[in-house]
Length: 260
Length: 221
Image (cartoon, rainbow over all chains, first blue to last red; front, top):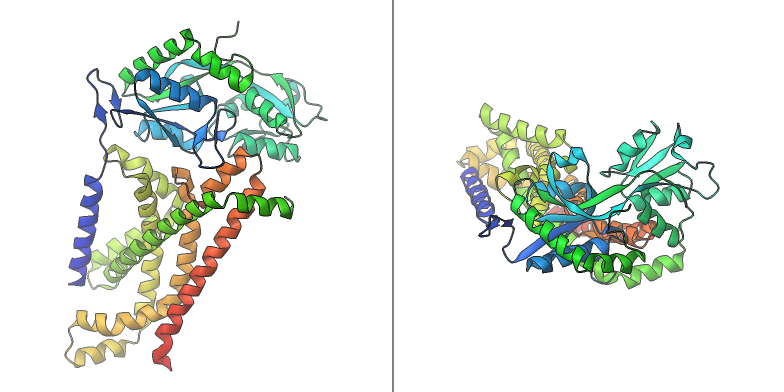
C-alpha cells in the first residue's frame, strides 16, 4: 500500500516537472529565444571591470554587461542578465540556459567547433604578471617556473607553450591574489584584468604582452539566425560610436577597434 | 587575514544580501532534506523487501549516487538532460541534492529498520497484524527514533553540500560570498563571513534535531 502511494507521489512529481519546462520561442525569421521579448545573456560577474556585481543588489554591471544591454536594445528586446560561474557559461549556451554569452570569451578554433562566435566586440591579449621584484620579464623566462591561470580560460593553452608547471585557479582574481602573496611565480591573464587588479592595490607588475586576442559574443550552434542579428547589432553599435563610448568609460581608451 | 573591525563592518554592511542568500540556502536544504527522506524511506523499503529485483534497484541507486561526486550529479541534472527538458535552476539544484541525500538516508533507514529485534515483527504478526501494518505501527516508529542521530548528521552534511548549487547560478551563501569577494578583491573576508553564517545554521539544526530526540525519548523513561 505504502509503496504504491510513494510511486504515485513520484509519478506526479515527475510529470509536474516535465510540464513545467520552458520551450524556446521561435520568431518569424527563425531566430530562437528563450522568451520572444527578451535577450537573456550570461556573464560571470567575477571579472572586474568586464562584469562585476553591484554591492547592494547583486545585479551585474561592467563593460560586457553594458555591451550586452546595448545589443539587446538594438535588437528591440529587453535585456535580461544571467550570472553563471565562468566554467558553466558555454555549457549553458549549448543547453539553452541563456540566449547568448557576453562574457569576454576569446575566439579560438577549438571552441568554434561547439559554439558560434559573433564578430569581435573588443580586442585584448594575455600578459605575464609577476611580483614587482621578479626576474621574469618575457615568455622565455617562464621555462620551468610555476604559472597560474584561471580555469576555463584559453590562457592555460598559452601558458603550456612556455612551461609545464601550470596551476589552475577558480578565477583570475584569486590567481593574482595568490601571486601577490607568493604562491607561484607568474600569472597569465588578460592585460585589462591585471591592470585593474594592480590599480586595486595588488602587489603585481605587468611584463611582456604575449599575443593579441579577439573577444566575441557566444551563441548556440543551432541558432545561426540569432548570430546574424547580433552581428548586425554590433555593426550598428560600432558605427554609431556606442561601443567606443562604453570602452572609454571603463578603460579610458577604445579597445573595440582592431589594433593595427 | 582581515582585521576584526574590517570583518565586522563588512558583515554588517552586507547583511541584507547574505540574509537573502541564507534564505535560499535554507530553502534548498529544506526541500532536499524533505524529498531526501521520502526517497530514502522508499529505497530502504525496496532494499528490505523480499523481491530480489526491488532490492537490486535499491542497491543500484545507492551505488550510483555514492559512486559519483555530488558536483557531477548537479551538473548532469542541470546541463545533461536539458536536451530532453529544461529543469528550472532551483529544482535542478534541489533535486540533485535530494537524490544525493536520499541514498545516504536510505542506508540509514535500512540499518535502523534491520536493527529492530525480529521479535517485534513476530509479536505484531501474532496479534493478527498484516506485515505492512506491523511495519508501520511497530517497526518504523522504533526505527525512526534510532535513525535520528545519524539523520541529524546527514542533515548537516546536506546543508553544507547545498553550497555546491553555487556552480549552477544559485545565489546561495557560498556563491554570494565568492562573487562579492572577487568583486571587492577581498575573498578572505567574505569567506569568513559565510563561515559564520553556516556555523549559525548548523547550530540551529543541531538544536532542532536534539529537541526531536528528547521528545521521542519520552517513552524510554
